[in-house]
Length: 109
Image (cartoon, rainbow, N blue to C red):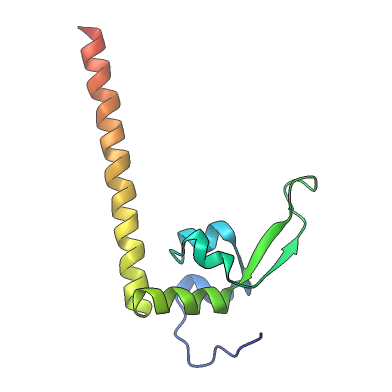
C-alpha cells in the first residue's frame, strides 16, 4: 500500500532517507515494540553483511512513522518518548559504571 506523505512533517533524519527501515531502526528510532512490527508489511532482502544469514525485513518508513505517531500521540509525543528512553538508557549505563567503580574500590581493600 503506497501512500503519499505530502503534508506530513518529517524529522531531520527522515529527509532524503530510504523509504525503508530495518527492524532495529523501527524499534529504536520509532519506539515500536515487536508486536506492532509483526502486523506491519515488509519486504525481505538478502542481508548485506552476510548472505548466509537470514533475510532482512525492511519495513515501509511511512507506515512505521504513522503507527509510531499514532501510538505516542503525534510527532511531539514520539520525540518525547524517544527522549525518555534515551534518558533511561543513560541512567542505566551510569548506574552500571558506578557499580563497576564501587566494586573495584571494594576489591582493592
